[in-house]
Image (cartoon, rainbow, N blue to C red; front, side, top):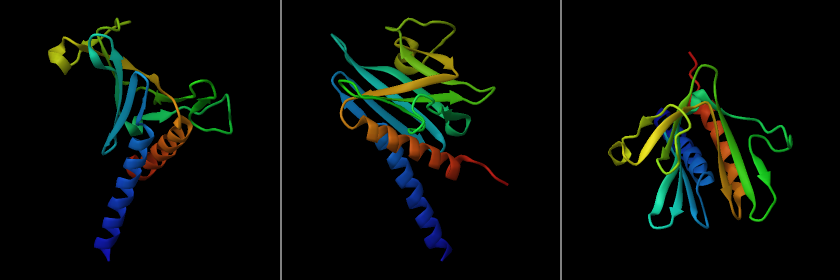
Length: 169
């Protein structure tokens, strides 16, 4: 009986990870987005089509999910944790904020000039990308179905952190 319970729990966890990753995946015009969950670590990716260079990793955030929360949306209280803009093309934004006393990495290519202190990324032997430390960021997706994706991502993220990343003892 205990084995069946642990198999079911592993299946539930895998389903939540799949929900978060599906909600964070988007491709529209010259941008691609993806997220990966590994245990309680989240990594986001945004690639941009750059003329003459092809697909370039334009931005990536990596953080422990327990120390970074989703900002509530004060503009439209009926939608928690993301902003949806009904424009052409539609857009959805999810805002992240580090908890007090913590920060996280934000990786960018050197085509985007650093705005402060940074360290070289191990990507491209430290010659193509750099890392800044951040306490607040957002991901924005554009195109069809972005509202459903933002809803899927945020509800999955919140539930996953509550069920698998909160340590009780």
